[in-house]
Amino acid sequence: MNIESLVRDVPDFPTPGISFKDITPLLSNPAGLARAIEQMANPYRGKGIELVCGAESRGFIFGTAVAQVLSAGFVPIRKPNKLPGETHTIDYGLEYGSDTLEIHVDAIRPAQRVLVVDDLLATGGTLKACCDLIERLGGHIAGVSVLIELVELQGRNQIKPYDNVRSVIRI
Image (cartoon, rainbow, N blue to C red):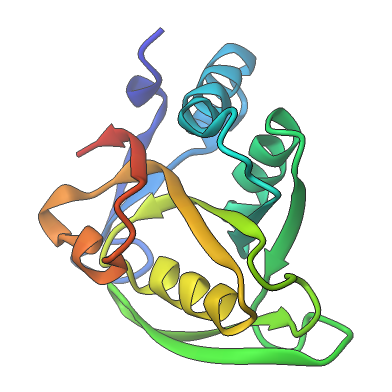
């Protein structure tokens, strides 16, 4: 099965000039979804991953599934004012604007091995913000796993020095 064929382009969404990668056809296809999760998790099997972190919102979809496959916990990284406890906050740039993310201050113990999971690596802003929040809490970034990487936007440059970055689909 070619899971790339289950991702469709939506032109000019959310703003003109952006070609949005719609994963809803993939999510509704049981075999495609299972294959995507396995391919995102497999490089990290046996690597001592203790937690998976995913950014709101599509990082939750893939992150919880990858955490289950790896027998790890899951920590959500959310948009502002969604977490009930004390949080660390970070502002960051997107391909088409800026945003803010938060994580509970007690979500990660020092030196815990964390895998960061999201659906898309574009400019790298969201993933860099996630990694920065995790490191602020003392976590160790053991890897970054994404479903789709938009190579021409060079998002990997934003998440250096992490060398264990894997993408299932490279466009």
